[in-house]
Image (cartoon, rainbow, N blue to C red):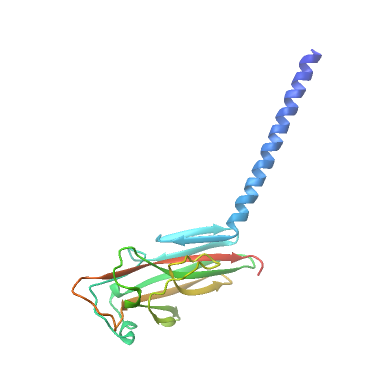
Length: 210
């Protein structure tokens, strides 16, 4: 009988030790996941892509079927003309929305990613970004040729993409943007049909020390 009790105690002790080790392992795993989730969050190409952290959510929203803008079979035009393009297929509207809690600052960057099927040269296109203030759009980035980054940024915008804007949220809010793109007026086009397309992507990072 005593031997049986001793064996039961040994088994109980071993089980308790294993349970303790498993709990510690799960706690370490949880801490690792939380640590990663507080660092950097990224989203791109989805109609409403949401990333959640302990301080809230940040969204990239757009209403078109594709996340970006394309120019095909277009004629060269001056910047002053391109900045006023009004046809629905000549501009791309999107918004960045943040739902934040606590004393944090969320920094974000908007970039244009060149599509693989583009055949125009980078210096043959012009991009122009505005944001909506009250009921009008104001210039954020003046007309500029597609200029890929040589190195990735600290926030995470990748080398090879074009940085369009960088800003921050200190509280919940929404910013509406409008992107236009056209063929540069000094581009020399041949009889071969050419095209150029970009997709909008956003990288963001939350600073919990602010």
